[in-house]
Length: 499
Ligand code: SAM
Ligand code: SF4
Image (tube, rainbow, N blue to C red; front, side):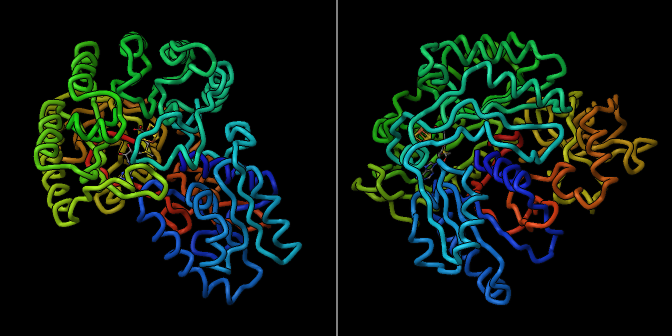
């Protein structure tokens, strides 16, 4: 969600006349879009601000803006701790960034503006999309749940749903622009539609996406096990462009812990959903989120989590050590688990999950898979000469292309290929061997056009959305890998693209 908000921030600034600073060049404006889900995001923000201090001192005209969840939480504390910051804006008023930058320049004084409720739905703002072939589409913002560990509702507000017609119009426009894949975004996609008086709206939205010509892959994140109903499973199974992938957060396998987390499903319900999804979509790759060391978690509770991990055969999991968040009920609970015990449990969970992911990935060997080629997902690609992309089930695939397809620029990010899996590793698949098919796409054409334009390639040609390093004179680069955004990415123990 933050990545997509960053695309909106970039689009807004571009509309206001800002342009990308070249990679490595000194930018005139740096925007941090922050996350507050776990505590280490706090540390990273202040560390990154500290790193920028000498640059700002040498170039007082440079502006630094901090937005997003941590800004909503810390407000003017950010200016107290880092007085060289120029603008602080929250989660509800992204659209104010250009005005606040302007006002800070004009008044030569820091501007802190935090709104208490959503002012403009971010989807109505311009976006600078990080990829030609894949796009995020918000169906809702905020959350009405009260999970006791979670700071999101207090920073993002209650759930606000977009009208299905608006969502579909955005998807259609993206597809007309060359996108092949969309991911529908919401904190709890299964409650989508309740505020519109239509509880079956999410399943209907999936089916409606199935009627959009040219849309090849539909994903969504995150569903909530409490609200995950069979009509959604049926819609997934019966809509050919909905991918055989499900990211469904478990959090804990212990009923007692789930109760204290105020997650109102139990392990049996969770495992029942997994079973029904597997019956309806036999090759579905199911991924999850798990928190270790929630207050009061006993060894028995943790053993229940390991049991569910074994039974569910997750293709991957985002695993987190519990992090107390200010103002949340869990932060006041007794029974803090000794950090050494948390670390030890975390390692045990991670190695069990790696074992399970590896076994699931080895079972893919020999299968012919369709891969949407991407850019920036294979960190070693330039050394190994491989391409990378995602299979329909979200698994990451690396391939060594041989023969005529191996020439630079023949297979492009955004193109669709088929190959046979030759190896399953814990976190990815390898498909080294002849390509069985290669389809050039308009997304690939757009990537190629951006590459030949050269200077914009870093952001236009499909690098990960991320920090925006901007200069108010020309064009903008999405500085992939730069320190300007603290998105708080979790440890990923997965093959599939589980966001
Ligand atoms: N709305 C999604 C759901 O209900 O599953 C999750 C959104 S949350 C931003 C992403 C993940 O962060 C959660 O699934 C949870 O595992 C993790 N998380 C949230 N708060 C946490 C905390 N205080 N400590 C550790 N992990 C946390
Ligand atoms: Fe947080 Fe997700 Fe629970 Fe909402 S459903 S409170 S976002 S963990």
